[in-house]
Length: 629
Image (cartoon, rainbow, N blue to C red; front, top):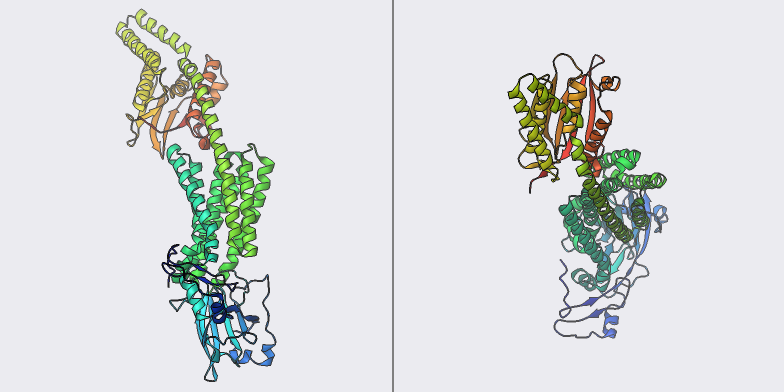
């Protein structure tokens, strides 16, 4: 039976299983129940049973045999700090010799949430059993937080004892004594909340509220700025919420009562998922790919390893026969993460470049300490406390990260403003302008006035485009390619159509609505023509290819010229200083448009060879896609 919600004016029950004071208030009015009446009714209505344990090496032991002196004497007091070994069978002996059960014919015997419990009692002179447990809830009125059996006084073995066979497979649990409850007290405890329940819920409520606030905030930051760091942080917080927040008894208990195996699978796998997304978040937070390359590789291997453990856990749980092994896998995973985290923290502290890593290390240490305490003290609240402190420290770190990003953006913006005019002025090689004017003069001298006029018109148009683009941060891809084609035409006319030119545009490329920085490709094309194709004899080809690669624009500039080694070893380069300046400015402009995670991957220059001989150069450029708003 589910517990109804408490309303202050309706019904309020205060009851602690470890206490003896009971206060009852009735509907629409406070009708006191006098303490002396309660004392007379429930003077011995609840208490612990003298419980002793015997670890069975033989599965076929019968209750009759256990009552023989040989085995009876082997029952020992419950160990304090030990836990059940999965797959092993234990026997509890409940001794009612010092317990007064005179107030009711039937009593509730309550066990902790062990997976499988078989209770043996005496009936008509022989042993009879009934079974229940966390994985075997056959009675609909079982409480989700314990396992209850109904026993009468005349069912006690030898008028004093009960035997219980216990097998706890799926979760680590300590040895705890059984309780006895008067049926009326058990009914009240099942159907109504207690002050103890409410006090127990407070940490969960605070944790859930704080986690939900941070999850929504982080996702909001991600959707506004598209910063992957906040996305992974929000996902990590969500897994923490699904692991710790959902464990609130009000939610998790009733679900576990109805679907014990499903909720066990959920609980075992979600805690590994927490570690996986923690590693993903930590990798991005630390910028481990570039600042801690060795740690980045180790994190990748650890993520794959944890994923494999999740698959193994699921197979073991579903196998039923080998389910007991899964608890050891969980313990191994926990110790692995403790060791991996500690080694990672040492590596970070020895190799850090930015003080922001201290936020991650300090916050993680709190969570690690809470997890270790929860593991050894069997209380999930320690992990919740550690997680709460970790989230607070991580939030400070994320705020500091935002501050650094804003400072970096401002610095980049300032540098962009300085580079814009310098770069655009340096886009056109002064020698190109000089050579273009000489080419026009040569056409005039040779009486090729039509070609001279055509060259002059195109040259003037290109100069106007450069001046027009100098005031813009971005132009459409169509405009960029038209200006580039115009520049190549002028170079072809200057070199008397000495080389071929092919422009390929992918079918999924939107040249009208996608934007790029103005004249960003021209320095690389100029370099290919002047230093690659011009010194070559024979067939000369220049290819510019535009395509979309995931969320980026990809450019390939390929020539079949003499290669970079020839250019470096000859005096053909007319103005090496200009080349280095123009290429360096173009590189900076490209890097400034990219995100930090892909820095140094946006420009690649490859030397093309065949049989060890240079056959040209290929430049690969990646730019983020900017859409016209």
